[in-house]
Image (tube, rainbow, N blue to C red; front, side, top):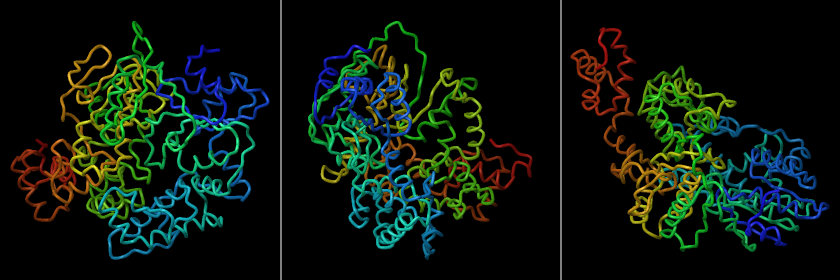
Length: 601
């Protein structure tokens, strides 16, 4: 049995409803096990886990402690038995894709390119919003207010009636069993049934990540309720998380001591959370690092990024310098090359090369150019496709070879611990810890936060999304056990660094890409044809606006002549106002090297 701290003892000795705010690495699961063990063996306890992986880990922990009166479930597993089995529904293992909804709902093409697919994308998002909300009807929701990008919001506003009508039809088809239902749908149906669960105590883990519908099911219960989590680790608002700890009025206790890291990392974590004073009322931050890792060898090294794009750029840079090092990607490298909608980097690369027959994804297959993809991204606000497009325009036809090399250097899951470097986005490594952590410079900084507030004004900023951007930095920082390498701009003024926290770079240096959640930034940069000098990728687009235009016969002829004259790629790129990758791609498409026996220079 573990020795409990005074904070843990206080939690265990408290009766009645309770919320526990637990910092990263503070032993919250151990505390909940001790809490359950302190209750009479006849007490019926439900441990409500956020997802399946947390459920499996918790079930093993409770089993090892021989706590037979604890049942471990997720909200979805509870709902599955009550809804799916009872009604005889068939569940779709993966979500519906835009191209599937078009024939399913009879969405007709209009005069606008890809209109039916853009509508389908908005319909899916509205249905997902409803299924994760406490609303009784779709019409109660203000979907437009959730769209940050101005052009996407304008499109949704123009087609609001159609989007809402078809969302209701989609839900009705699932409810009638005419089509397979989604996991979100049966959880929503469960919540609307107002279930009462047969337990005396419910322990709700990772409460900061719960959706409104999960929280409502929990709050409906008449038993003793304990919700546990870290209010500063909410990073899933884009999946409809509502930070349930802040929305419950239970008495609050804290687990403020982290057994993962020491005082230096704890100090930096507090500094980062201190940025919140710029967007909300300043609150006390309780984080204490009590771990001591002196003289312990480093066994795991990880690179953590805010985005897939930032991570892949660093991973590519790493393998070019270290072609024999062993890698591991949290979630497998395969998952970083696909969007939720199903499109892969290769589909976008084939669109880039106008190799239409080789495109597999039905959505991308209906596009005739990168301009079509750009328009789809603009009118749907699809962040994943936007990032994948950036990768394709940056690396062009080098992508297959680079991805192949990443896969070749990646170890098997059984050999994960032998990897020389682990790569992960912050979302995929939540709950993980590593000895030595390097943070890619694509996160929010205090300077950029202040710039955003100044640009949009105190009344126009999206405080919830900016709050989540700060949380992402906090979660990333607190993955480190022994050493943390961070951009210098993360650190307090005058901080010189040391053996534990090692700064790199200078302010405004490194990969600095658009932050999802800064309102209208992408649309504003596009419409005004300007961008923040620090916005590395948007600046590249601004300098090469022709990179997305189709090549004309005249341009192909001009390219052929200049290529034969020996113009180097960089000079050709400047002449045609395109990226070097676009030039190499067109030379390959026209087979100029093979035809004229000339190598690229």
